[in-house]
Image (tube, rainbow, N blue to C red):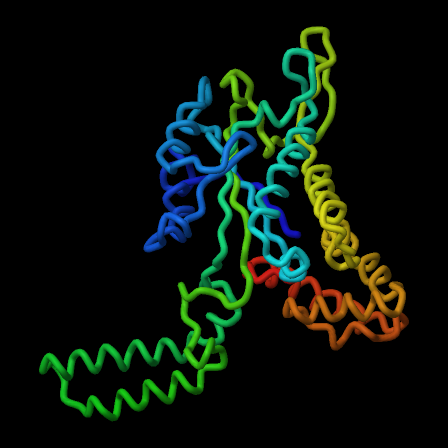
Length: 344
């Protein structure tokens, strides 16, 4: 499970409206029948229209400065093994989304009128998506790039020949294009992978639009607060502040495991990802110290995510090899997460 929380920006400033983001999330509904489209949903309903989402989020921004985000985006990315475990069930994913929004509310370390924040205070709309598109940062796109560049040049030359601006053999150039498409290292069903093409396999994930302000439009609730969960003295009173992101993500992970009886491997955990970033040697030691069967599963999951594992089984006494293995592991993990093809 990979969860991100980001303020929605346009260049160097925050968007004044959620309209562009809602439009982006509606892209999968194009050319689909009424029975096939995915609606926005939240704790209170299942079929909210895009225009109503825009109106509600945009109208909930009282007293916010231009330098402050109006809304945040939470993206919930189940791994392929997690999706397989729940048979890619849309209703289960929606119910899970509603459940973790309770954890989101509890992660705010502050009160509203003397009580803890609850999910009923959070104004949000969620949308389930089933596709991911290849981006320029994906490994397949980067490695296909030299072939794609030559193909574009040949296609331009063909257009010039047809318009009389250039002399040449169109048939020969078309054959060259076919050869390049065949030689490209990454293909889906024999077709060269290009930017914007839908990724293969199950790709279900959830986008959640969360208003910066609470349901009453009176209180600002920022999950991106620079303050961690703490208390400060303000006008002679102890005041709670901050949002505990670690608590939210950890509890969301726990929700999935308990709700769906999922047996999570060490490398699939949020704790492990943090350990890899902050204390890579500890991550490495934990990985190699797993019981034999769990270690085998861990290596398989890492390999499926495109993380190099060939150098991991080296004696810990060989410091340089260990360091090299750890760096490869970190690089591979980052690429796997950035690509959106999340397997761990």
